[in-house]
Image (cartoon, rainbow, N blue to C red; front, side, top):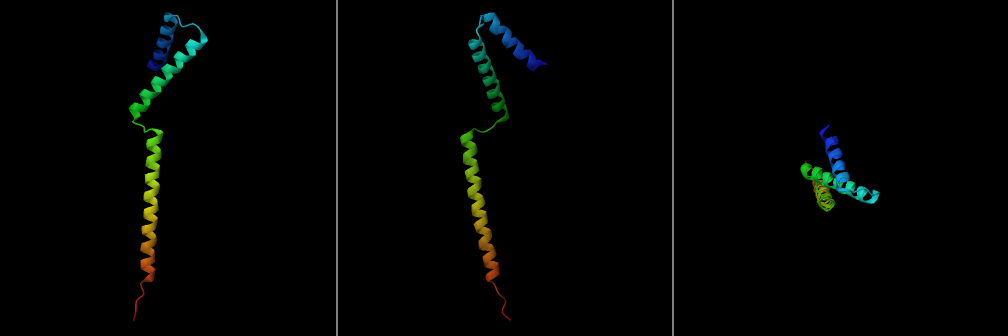
Length: 84
C-alpha cells in the first residue's frame, strides 16, 4: 500500500507543478522509475555488467585450471604400474 501511495504522491506533485504535456509526464515518470530501480539495485548490492563479465571470465579460467590438474592427476595414476 505504501508503494502505491508513493507513486500516487509523485503523480500528484507532477500535476501540481504543471507538467501536463504527455512528453513531460512520460519523461518524469521514467526518471522516477529509474531512480527507484537504482535504489533497489543499490540495496541488493548487485554488480554491474562489467563486473559480472570479469567474474565470469575468472571462473572460466579457474575451471580450465581445475580440468588440467585433474587430467594430470589421472595421467599420473595410469602411468603407475606395480611390478611383481
